[in-house]
Image 1: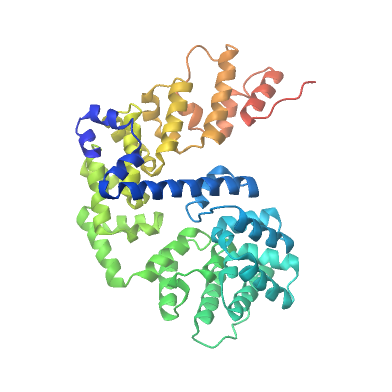
Image 2 (image 1 turned 180 degrees about the vertical axis):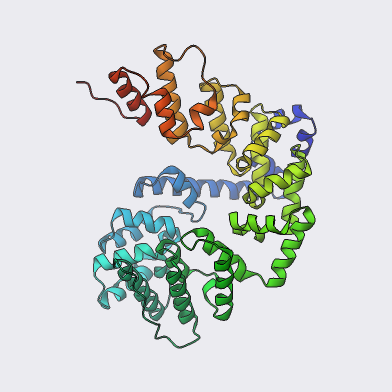
Length: 457
């Protein structure tokens, strides 16, 4: 469908846009249609309940709840209610529970009485207070997923040591592990300590302890990989450092050389490949097939080969997007009235758009075009608006414009989109709010911008 549209069969696209993309995907396999529908309905029902439960039981935002629902499927409130009730009885606050569920949502499906309760009682029997227990486990909730008591003890004590040491105003080096040399736990603790010594923060450091990834399990390989990443200049305080370490640890030197050679064959310089690695380390995970498919998709959007290389160099994350997600994003914009020429411009200026959901693209475009009456060309000229939060950035600023137009202070035509949406908050407020001499008007506009109603005096 996508390739046909991009070669000019616009009428077919518009007809297909009336149908659900999910339905089209299901029809691709007619023999399994009924079972697919049943599975899809069950999945949607579970996802809908999960989102609703997280919003109402923990006060999480809908957006965050939708993200969590892709990792855990709750069928009813019985089990998660039992888990939350148990944790609250041990002194966990709502804030800590939100953090736990966000980082380890599968805990909501655990057996509260048969599995979690004995582990909590065991940790308390070792002298942990309720406040210490909740603080430690909210940092690394995956500890509660460990089965053996000895392992739980080791990881819990280490996390506790890190937390207490980091509370000191001076850097405190952790004591050496007393575990048998060469054991997996000893390797993990030693390697985590090495990362901490380099400045890797708690939020990135502690979750690695219980990770299934083999990153921390080795000794010589870990040291070698760590040395390479440090020499590349990655900042240990950022997530890119850990991501780069994972990649270097995963592949042999020969495998890395082969991947670099592949990109060189595509037309990149070696220095460009490593520059892209510095921007987005996981880009080296992509297979040659995935990269080739990505390039073909971009060609169908009207980009020339040199433009594609430039785009990938600028935004290597785009290679990781699935073909389905990319096609949905492009199909959505075509359905909304953008031309293939518009897509080419948008891709050059804001390639991130192909990683956004169809729902987000549609909602933002319809608000700007239908509600605010900006033309599609305005969106094409400032495609970064697709990346702005509708709730936190776009709507508040547009509400200020509406207020000014209602009062006749802006003229009959909207200003161009870029000065309104693409500038920083301070620049926007100075241009459209603070410049007015009427203090009452400024206060009113500020209230409109922040979404807070002014009290009548």
